[in-house]
Length: 462
Image: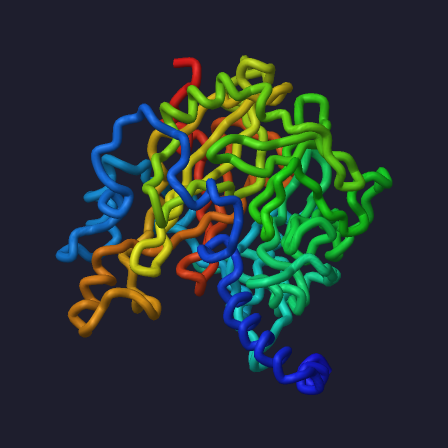
């Protein structure tokens, strides 16, 4: 029906739909050409730390190298290699949605079924030419042969489409989009939520939140009436980007909810109300501490083709072991944490390096620590794809050299505690799921002891 409707449009709209197919196909965290905040795509204000290599050099591999074990030996000094606690080879596991291809995965424990998790990811491909329709896949999943697979065929997560009139100029094609983009699914202290991108009332493309229980067969639970049962658009402090993405929410010690919009070049976050409205930006209240910490530990970016941005949802962690009977959560040992990423985009191929950030659970939520090394997920390999159109390659020998000079694109999207019944808060010895996409073609995850992610942490107070 949608295709027949499009055929009846004027020829110029047909042209726009072709543009939409191409552009929306690349819309997600990896889209470099959108006019978002300029500071996210230029050299930021971080300075003072020592850098001996460019990011292009630091995260490239020798053309003579190949397998993942060799790569890890070469990069071990500059990364923290993390290993699975459950797979036979300690490498990451594949996430499979039956016969469907997907990107940007999420994993949360099933609320009722033991040894079962709910997985969600964006449907990757359509058989419809010039499609403008997008959807999220969802299913209950179990581990089989070190793979997390759907028990039954995945279903479409029933997120409603939105409509807006704020996409103009180069982004006019976004007006034709149908369906959500790049959903994050995660637990708060008591309730699961999803945040996703769709047309906005305030800008071209915004961020929306909804109680995840409204979208799946969750079983009966009581509702407070304030838990975003209806899709709710989130607002942010000015200025808006034309396309907003990667926002996350977090909860303070009292259980109040806040939204975090930017991590670089400065943090922007505010108290969130249940209608999507916000209070004032709280970032300036923590800026003296945060700016000093960021100058020390934040990854540096080049003038062009590099950026730092938010990636995952948030969780809360107490920095002692659950197994330790003397471990008691308090303001001095319990913090909010999230994963952010450094992106490079050389030769039309994206490479992402994930870092951990911790901040206090009380206002004004100053930074507590930033990891000094990015994580390297065990099993990540060299880049095996072909360079995208526009790369400086001439012969098959150039293609081979290009493949061997870069590593795979692992894009971290979400995290959750692995243990059933565990929602927002955890301890240093708990096991964490990290979900990620590989080269916009595969979904995967790794289960790690969260303390392993904190071995190279740099304290802001040090």
